[in-house]
Image 1 (tube, rainbow, N blue to C red):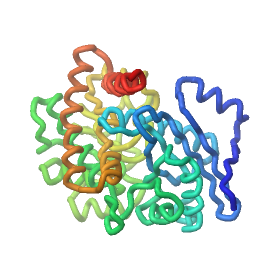
Image 2: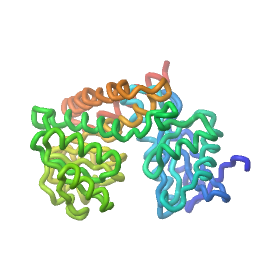
Image 3: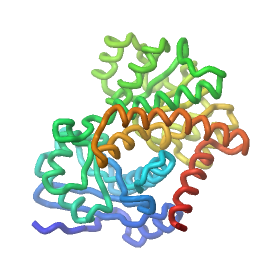
Image 4: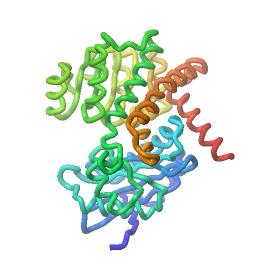
Length: 364
């Protein structure tokens, strides 16, 4: 079957252009549909000034297509900032597949998705994300070379989660240094919300440093593993914002920092792996600032996974990827200092640096 792009949305197509013109500034949005495999996907390319867009493919059971569109637009925009602030020669892109990853995903579906990726001729490079795996990327690679996150046996970097977690750990330590004058996490009360692959690795890092770790997750098996392996204390998902803690680490889905949760937060630092943690970047970044909470911008400190898959494009070496990810500590420190000096939110400080790099490249 020939690769085609089908626009199918619960809102009129004209509204899509209104969304794109409202400040998101995407270059291209592609709707992908294949009846035979059941594939319903959206690929969003936000910016390619610094290089081809690279971002993972998320598979999620969205309630409707508008929510899927909103997610992929926000995620791809975040990838632009993530690549720029990390000094990578990449643009921002992302893809979402609508469906239940455990029930609906098939090898044929992922291969068909690979055909759509290939049709973009390298403007978008995909990788794994929530709901997809290195095995899925192998299926995608049968139809396109524009894929990363492959198993190590195939020359890839394998699961990027440990490197992502390491970057969050570096950002967390830099934030601790800014707040308390020391980057030691020993004795700190840290809540990790979301114990998937990244969250589990983050729990490992902070536990080994002597932190008192609390965990919350919707999956009982994840919680049991954290209790058994690291003696973490379980917090009910409805009690997260009532807990007295030093550091809140959101590592699940986004928008957990909002009008309702921020007033309840009982922490000094927010540093986690989730994308788009702020429901409204401008408003909620300032709310955290006004409350005296140090916020480590998510698109900066969770960039380890992107750094890891980017290194595949140049010949993968895990030690070099970790070394590059370690630099997140220094960049976080610089951004926190800039935010204090200019009396602006940390997310705005990070965005200014990322946007300036893109402008400089565009004007060359």
